[in-house]
Length: 469
Image 1 (cartoon, rainbow, N blue to C red):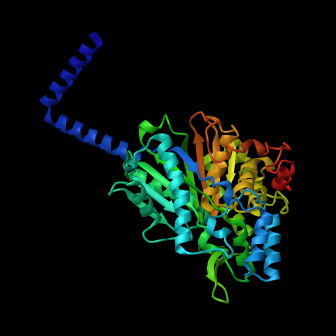
Image 2 (cartoon, rainbow, N blue to C red):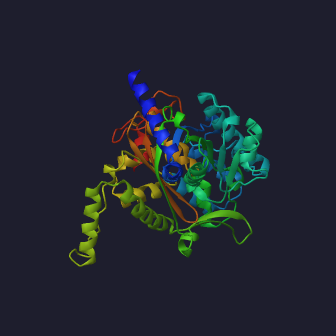
Image 3 (spheres, helix red, strand yellow):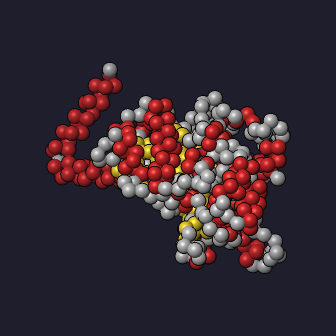
């Protein structure tokens, strides 16, 4: 009590002094305004990932490899050469028998239409959004920012409009629908939210990531377009983000870095993944033979920018010394420049599950072990390539395995047409309960712990071989 009276007394004395000297009062007011402006201009905005939900298709939508191949044969669309090529790709893809496709793709021949794509979008996004809202008791009208990304399905009204209509969101919600941005668009959406939150404080954002499989099957003979038929599967995710201080304690992760690399100015990179028409006028997504090379180039540029922000000084120094030796001829030209040990910066790695070659290419480039890519391989095996949502299935895999601990850092690496390589770094800021229900809960125990010959989903040890051979 005495200290409180002393503070009031001092405050009154200062006020009386300032009133006695008007010019001091003006100067003090100006300094206060400058301090407030500087605080709001230069303070960093913390972005929290409260939670996320991944779509788990019902088991009746499974498309085992044998069934998939039989379906291709029965459809009567492809000649023998095209069938053999797709079968060969499927058998080497790293995709297992539990990956799913929409109902209309199970039909013979597959039914691709606007209504089919809408139905698929509704099934996925309505489910994951409702899951998040129910779990955290979120009133849809409290969502301030809504961002969706889906590359090949761009309906009118937009996907965000579909969600606004379904859940009755506010009329002044800031909504954005991204299309044509490839498998890395999920991180682009996060980046957009990050930039918006610099301006709009106290905001709650919902991000939706998916790709529509229904309308995008290729029915021609172009080999580079047939690859996409075999690797894409049904999936999607919803992420709930906030920059509100009151959400810090209940959030799972905090965004630390987000680095974007775009090589669209280079023709080879630009043309590596492209939707186009073949000689017969049929539309498909062509994947170039240079895709892995292009991805490696984009990743290298991305890592050069990310490295100084995350690596300990000891690793950065080793790299600089190696670079100088190579530059000035002190090191044999055939010897590679030192690759920093990124395990000293991250506990976990989530590599876009675009295909086995992509995962292996990133592991090789970053000098990672096979175990570091387990979440990515497991996601590819169970869910296939789900485009921009694959990184979130991988995060849930780590959570379901009980490996994500408070303080852990995870590096998400996404690739997409354009060509783009994007990185997001998250820090786990809460205790993660591995028993919490998610898309992996029903059979996470069947997936391999690194180096462990666990039982596969078929009831034998074949799954371990499928993931790592």
